[in-house]
Image (cartoon, rainbow, N blue to C red; front, side, top):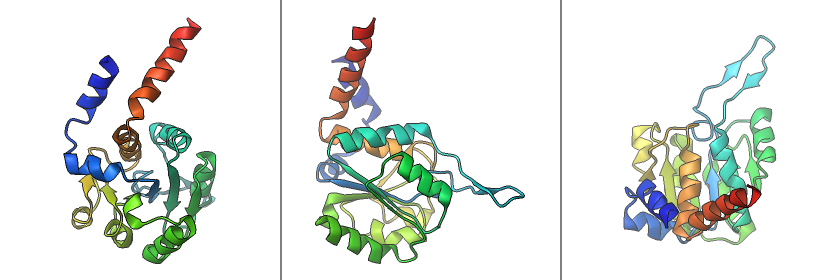
Length: 194
């Protein structure tokens, strides 16, 4: 019961229409730069690329997938660092170097036999508008471009690379009454070890 109260308090700012949208979602797609990262790119003298990810974002992927949500990424840049991260997290799919995200989104819907309203998408910039404007549940990080936010159903409390993906993952699980059981199950397992 205490877990339910804490989780409800965490999500007390979410309006009913967002919960309704979230209950229909089967697939969560994310952009990478500016969502899974803070949008910064670091190159060293050897032209090696570095990105910083939030481990809390990554941790929720396995819980989503275990609970029958698909997770994917569509990013405009080609980056081995990003490919490695998507592979490490076991995304169901990840597409890189995509310049026309709307077209790629159509391909994903056809391949997975889904309707647009069964998809959630997190994006932060112009290239994301063709998907943000069509999905059932569109989300922007807190630090997304302001006019891009106008295409989102929900603007996260968190910035890119600082928990926006985790918040959305938690929200999807909670909308389907899965988050509290996950937490309680994990806490019970820890208690069993003592």
